[in-house]
Length: 379
Image 1 (tube, rainbow, N blue to C red):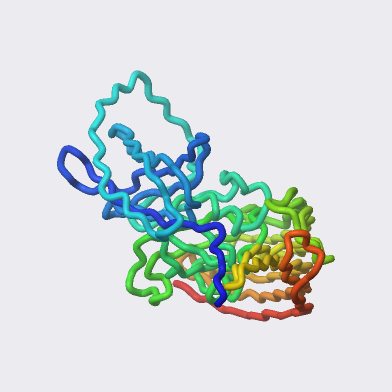
Image 2 (cartoon, rainbow, N blue to C red):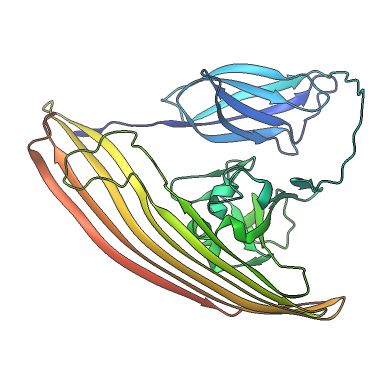
């Protein structure tokens, strides 16, 4: 008989927020999970019905803080156990609070978050990772957005999310997961729009919401452009020492991304070219597992997947505006990725890790190309 120990259990918590005075749900209230050390673990905002969902909370003790403008902040202490994967914290009632404004200052600064009834728009340059990293890194800092280890994007706990590029579907966003967003530098996008209540014109893949990524488009007339270079070191340390399989897992994951944006614009014509190259070493998977056999033997093994990756992307297009109400768009896309995955797994039946019980591993070299020439006409 074989049993496998469960490591790193995670819990999904949920609840609803109401006004104490009239028992009405409070949409867009801030919800944050604080650890016993005072550090922020996760956060989100409530939906139109006052409901919130937070996934990926490690087992442990936490405080849930709920706040909203004009209301008193409420705190609830809770314990996330390792036996149940879901935890309903029930209803949170916020009492109203009178606030006196002594001074009002109005400035013309561009807002980081622009809200409307149907969507919220976040300026990429104002996000914590806007100066570097990928689009996927920038999206991890948005409220209500979570990304799992496989690159799947979720809004308020649901993976029924449609990802658009400049308002249109694109192969860059991936099928089944949004891993392709990791290969788009955040410096190339203008904003990220979150549509929580999409209309019926979107298909069922976007039932939970729509994420629209808008690329930068220069507004200056004439020829202009920019060149960029970002560098990252990835994971500096390791959460646990590698088992002696002879293949250490990647730790100092070097990543660098040179990019180039060129643009030529007249009153009615806009021609642009964008390109970047990403080279990085990644650790997509690094799992430690202990197996307890019926005879009392304990087998331990580590699945470490080292990936060396190169990604090339080029986009050339034009926008023609024959009149203020008409736009003709034509662009070509070339996207090529090549990576090598190396994995070695040895099963150790002794705690000295000197006698592997069995061994296996794999080596995979894979590449794929995306070519696309979309056309869009509006007017």
